[in-house]
Length: 105
Image 1 (spheres, rainbow, N blue to C red):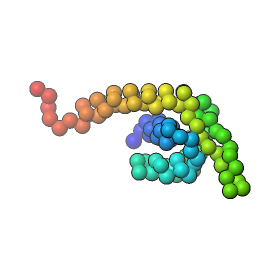
Image 2 (spheres, helix red, strand yellow; image 1 turned 90 degrees about the vertical axis):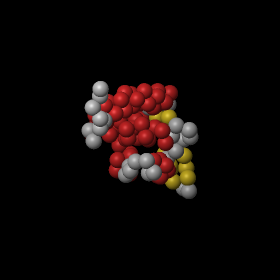
Image 3 (cartoon, rainbow, N blue to C red; image 1 turned 90 degrees about the horizontal axis):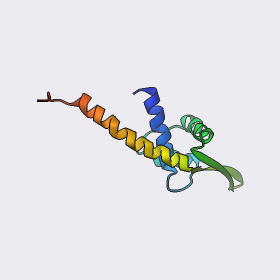
């Protein structure tokens, strides 16, 4: 798979994991695991990139004597998800054309 396409998909998967409620790294990995494998070494650079892009914000909260970072999606992050969904419809049209088994009449 094209690395740029995969990168964009991973970004949107991470944003989708926090779309309905704030979350933290381990839970994001757990929530996305049925759909896509993301390791910690992949997730945290994605989270930093999304924060730098203002697609999410970070809030540290003490949990069991340690600070845990919670990630919150921004309006720009929600827009990115919506844009991805619109773009994906176009990608699916191309896929259907390329993967077709019959010759058009």
